[in-house]
Length: 246
Image (cartoon, rainbow, N blue to C red; front, side):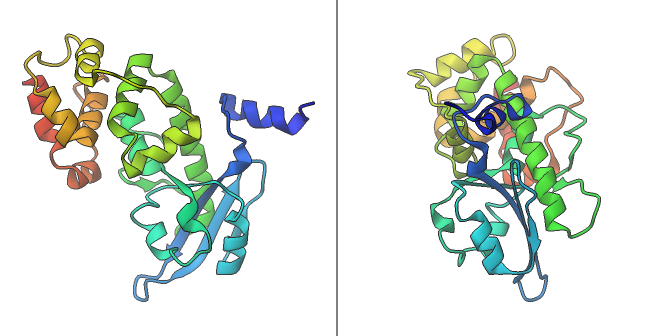
């Protein structure tokens, strides 16, 4: 017989998921500029008050039973300084930074973001950033669920084997098989991209840049621009846009 907490887990934020929400911990760290060591840890789980501590052991114990770790820019920042945390290499990782321009490509950008940074009320407060990352993550889940099915299928096919995205799809339990991804893209974006676009080449060589470019094209908003941090990390996005839209 399901307990009341099971229903709370299922309907939290209006999201239907096959994962219990206690399976994910939202984390953030404050790292010293000079010594490159973690001086402050923050972590929070759903239906839990979370922790704010300078104790690595307390942080380690808190996240030990979480299957997923989620945060903003944790793949290329926080996790570099957490490699000695017990069991962390076995965690599935979700990074809200890379999901944001995919699901919120319109200008103005998401309310919680300022370019690649979380908009927070307190400077250098990792616990506060955990709470913001948690809100952002569930907005991203809802944004993905609201996409047309064809667009979901395209994003999954392009990104499910990329480290910055695969944890997100695993958490949602989203898994499909597209036999011909180029046909699917031409069909979903009919009238929005050039029929002579070299899609097959882009799918193979630049799947991430292609996904971001398609997200921007889907807005039908000429004032929308690719965030500067994204162009810096994936400079070929602008070339992909030109190839798609001539």
